[in-house]
Length: 169
Ligand code: APR
Image (cartoon, rainbow, N blue to C red; front, side, top):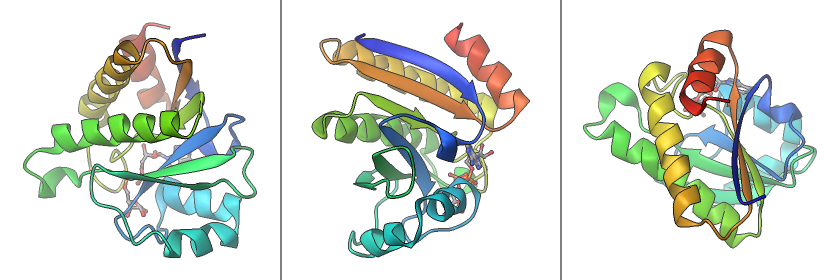
């Protein structure tokens, strides 16, 4: 397999892969958007585990079990708030790289990302998508001996078409 990138349109909580990534906030105690959907689908045990993690800094990532999800693991990462941050691209890149690093450390070989920061945190998807794609591609190139399938999960047609264009799949 080695490095594979796919683009998928739909609800990330329904995906049948080893790990899904949550676009969380620094408390890791849940919220709206994809975070709320993941907590609802995984069930209350997820919040219990998250309470013990002590939060997460922007650009960093922490891992939990997937509980009621098909995914065995959830990696929680905190994206930058676009208008409140003077280096959003760098921090968004960190989210993707640190999530992939943590996934590989845990022996994960398939991981699905939502559009981190592109909802409530206000990052325009037209700017975020190429940053996400470049960060993932770079990690795959640097870890070419490791089998990893990366799925970009888009919730709407605009992001889906944008990602399809960038990834050329
Ligand atoms: N599956 C896939 N993608 C989804 C889903 C879903 N079920 N629900 C929302 N999305 C998409 C949104 O369309 C958006 O493109 O996920 C992207 C990220 O949006 P948000 O969830 O708003 O995440 P973000 O912009 O990173 O803001 C994080 O929102 O509620 C919170 O706790 C979270 O405070 C944090 C903030």
